[in-house]
Image (tube, rainbow, N blue to C red; front, side, top):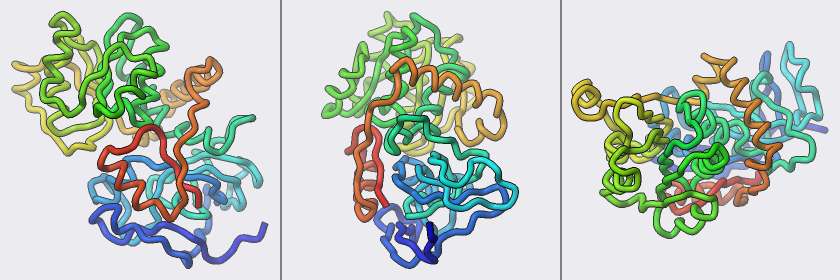
Length: 332
């Protein structure tokens, strides 16, 4: 195919938030460097990282103006020097942490461009490298979840939260989820044992009551702020684990005093990009298990809600205000 010189894209023009995301039609199509591939984007995934970058709260995030979006699915149309795989014409899903997915063309590292499994649609592949591995890494290799344990999953109606719930149920855990009341029915449909109001200031008390005063064995914490304090208080002492992989509600601090005298729990930080770079063997194990879960019907088959690229600012604003459910996507 002929690659044009310019393209349609959503450009973040400031660090004031998604309201400064602008649809432009004359952005230069990027050129793949050594070790990179260029894909013709079919669909782009929307993630909370996109909001963090737009707010300037994502560590080492891109500087405006930049083409937003980190997750894309599409066909390889050009390759950089030294690239043999994936080859031209291969449908792939990949993540570009510096942005570029909310556009007609996107550059991805060839090593991280994963072929879309046979029989999958482009929309099916969204989440394969962001939401699903984050949820699985939090539950298993880092969270060490075992059958019969109790797990508390915050933001359970979101894309990562929903994946975590499905997996935790599959692994035989007792699942306590939090979500806003208008999303409780959607969360219950996933098979949770209990669902709590995410806006309540009594989450820790409710979890302790549901667990006979013991607390949750594992907490998946993606909210931050005051919710992190509640998560620590809701966790089983000494053996309980809290895996922190998001700060959507703002940063929070934990002191040595907290860990020694108040909340004697294991606190584990998770960034999927760092996991890929620093522990590739572990990420390989996570991906192998993911494909096993897909084959078992635990994951997959849940299509995202899809919008036109021009609706991107509105979609991100709704995600930031927690008005959405499940995976969201944009069509360039």
